[in-house]
Image 1 (cartoon, rainbow, N blue to C red):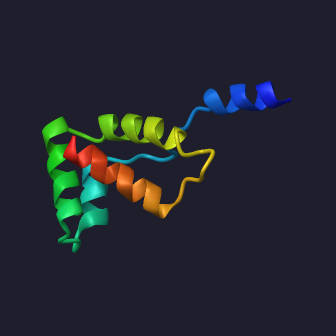
Image 2: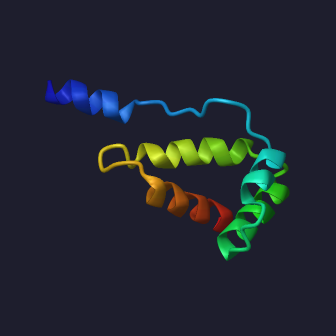
Image 3: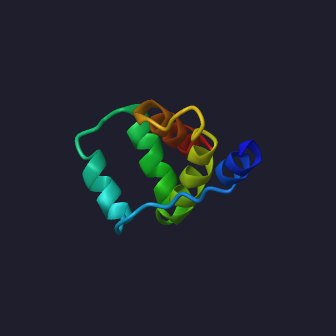
Length: 84
């Protein structure tokens, strides 16, 4: 059983439901003047969309499944992405 659980956790696939575009992200970040929000938006403009963000975020969040994916973890991963 231990090996099966390890295999399943190592091979879990994360995806995001719904349509999200750079305009959707702009709407969510509207009114947020934080450095993080500005850096993320600048990175998305540089990347010409959200596709790379979603792929990278899902891949990074996979590493946190054992310890928990929560608001703090997602925020940290978004900041790391924006700074990359």
